[in-house]
Image 1 (cartoon, one colour):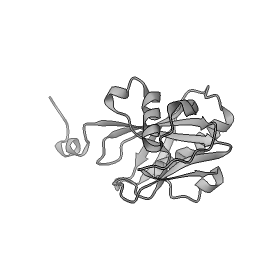
Image 2: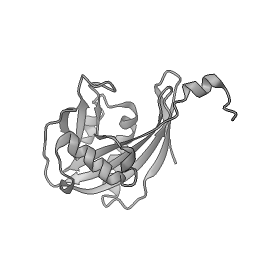
Image 3: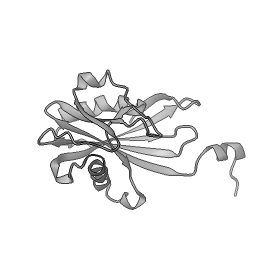
Image 4: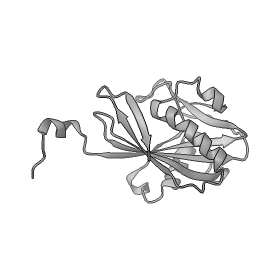
Length: 178
């Protein structure tokens, strides 16, 4: 079998990782997580709720997202209404596996503020998000998720697919949405 350039092949990890991120809303506020300082990836930075989708969960991505929210916050799946997959982002960060990021939105009937072993949770407005140190790709997706919740609260629009491109040093260059 011809594999091409050996150095290039070694630099490209032969893996696919899938992660979910859920933005929960209540009354014009959004529940975000500031990752604990002890986290390996993005310590102290803000994001939504979520985590890795396990291989056996690929047949039910909604269930995987709900499981992650419950693990991180204790919020039960039945407390979340209208869970909708809004964006799917494909990224190939240099030196990292090919990654799919699944961005969901949902609403809560009341503004619960549970504790989390993953970091600190806070309800923030759309305007406050701009002042937070949000993980790069999520910072670009959050306004789109909020817009989707506003325009299409029932989640009838199909999810949009995007591709993130990175500089060789691993910094995000841009996201192109199809």
